[in-house]
Length: 160
Image (spheres, rainbow, N blue to C red):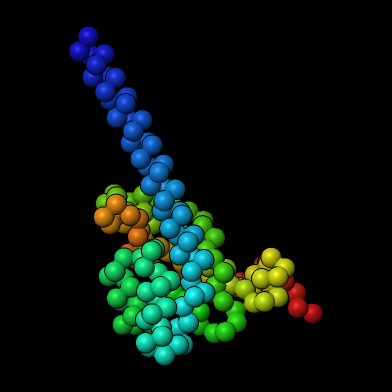
């Protein structure tokens, strides 16, 4: 009888862990996508005071206070719009992987568009990003952001 109880408790705990992991993955992906959709709201060329307000408004829901403070101090490391066109439209998620410390690493591509691509559904360029997310006070937040080099565009809309 005791063996059945122990096996039953182990089975229930395993199912609960799988459900928790599934909910965490959904939240991590949702945070990453929401963050990508907010990147166009931050002009990296804006005056410092305007830039800081934009960073707070666009990223507070998605990023940790520590990384937001880093971005405010060093806009060259921050995500956002570098020119008036193209601008980041969102992040295409490629993978997510749980780390041994409980954090998640998300690999993706930021898709950039101009008004032509935005209207046609294409994109003008893309670059890889790596996001690290940790659960802080019950919420998955970005604690690391690394931008890679521009990738060749194989899906651009022709402007001929």
